[in-house]
Image 1 (tube, rainbow, N blue to C red):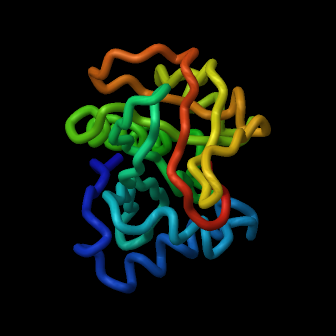
Image 2 (tube, rainbow, N blue to C red):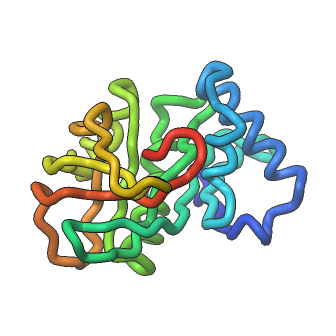
Length: 177
């Protein structure tokens, strides 16, 4: 397996971004919306190639969060996908190892939201489930997101934290978590 490529959105050619979007559309069985794609842009992309074929993608984007009442800089993991015929070969782990290094070097903590299907990858790597209540800083103020409670995972990046505290994410279109 080749080492993942890591590059900022601004460093990637349009063809690589198009290949990344197509890979994620396939990996999410057509359920990867335009808003989901927008959430992956503007940060660091981690790409796994097999020759000229893109077979894996993940991104780490900066998001503002409130940990209790304390503002923190969060490296939020988005758009993790491996081509279906290449799954189970360690590519997802390689993507996440690179994402974890980015989070540890640049952010106060890492976070992500995943489906039940994806949870195993993150738990096996040491990501933990946020225990406290989640919310979003929406245009009308802080709004609880109880449907996300128990589905937000975190990665410690040196910031002392209590995972039972409330965690509030910044507002964005589409899925806020």
